Length: 291
Image 1: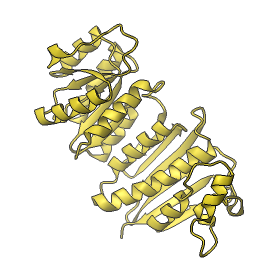
Image 2 (image 1 turned 90 degrees about the vertical axis):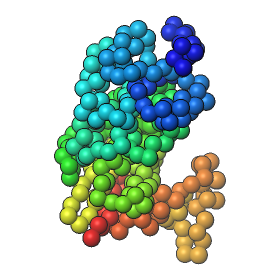
Image 3 (image 1 turned 60 degrees about the vertical axis):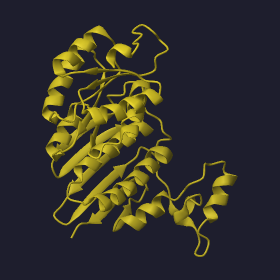
Image 4 (image 1 turned 45 degrees about the horizontal axis):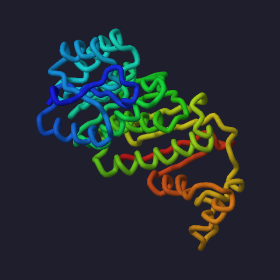
């Protein structure tokens, strides 16, 4: 397959150059098709040494790891990759991972870690976005991290927010799949609200995120750089709707020229056990009891 792929190294029209490291034949075929459908140019490497040889010869944007290697091995390779091609993004495919390994990946500025079951369309889409983003491997700063307490600072870019959600999802090992999906959906709604309304998606601004595991709860804290809000000042949000008028805010949003939506806070409130805002409204706690 490699011989059949034309790789125009100096062609500026290529939007995404991807190097895949020895995945299983079944996964490889599916990933190849997903990347090809998005106009990516890609090749396969047999292992770490071959990956470095490819990087020395051509400017790849993204490297997707072999799910058969450990995260420790992938991070060791990433360090060597960055010496050869600074700025190259790594997407780690990890069938299994520990919180310590996810934290190590965050510190090493891995672009994304995806666990099983692998979603090839999502992997390919992230590869394209990593290639097109400016300085895609930065954006997330680890302030403090251990198994039960992770504190991050992230720029207020939608892609960065989605990466934060991806990493923190991998840390929720105490929850079964369905409660974890629900909890992370609630967290996503609040985080996206913070960067949309608190920072207007301005990448020069930052949001602070803390994820804490206690014996009886999972707690998320989000602080955005905005000036906050008062509850009587957000008629465009579903949480402000009067009783008996569940979609009244949609008319307000249309009149204000805003996109449809506004259900974020209401949705999150229905999923978590406690949703607490600070006096200013630019800090929020999400608490989900586990016992």
